[in-house]
Image 1: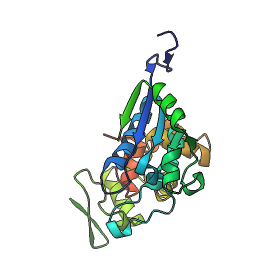
Image 2: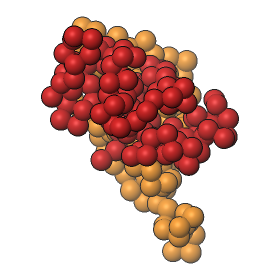
Image 3: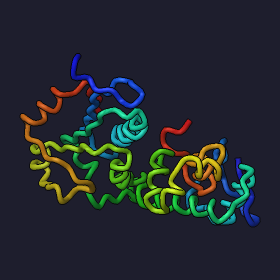
Image 4: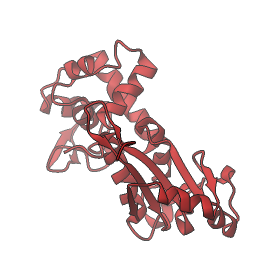
Length: 130
Length: 110
């Protein structure tokens, strides 16, 4: 590949997309995905996060987890910027189906339609689905 | 494992991190610091308190790279660098300061 990027130490920089499709609680997927993103950030790769289906709810403002005895980890998404993870996308159809707009979410996101989602995926070296 | 603070027994995990965040007091922090062989100064407490505020806001203990950057932003470049932070906490600023602050081990820290 001629357009491959290299980091400061000369290692290749790959494009990683973390695809989040599940509700934040009830399964461990959302929290595990977030932890992998935070740990993976140390490797300084080109990281994007895409939220689809019930995964959209991971970013919903005003989560109250008292009743289920789980930590509300939604504030942690706001720390991603400090980990240099700045490309956050949501799927428009999933947002519309749930009656949500960008204002309902804890972090700024870019809303993508189906064609843009396909382009985003096409553009990646690695896609990790949670 | 457990530590003894003002007559109260506080549960810790096998590495000495407090199990219940709510158990933390400055006295507890001071006692954990002695187990880490750290002589707490105002500069140490500044980092510990910074971490507690960070955790309160983001619900995570930051990785050391992020901690350094965030401290630099808030307290200035003379404190936001690894040399300064490692002088305060020789065995790892994130690891040791988090333990003293009563926070969980930072994500991704082994």
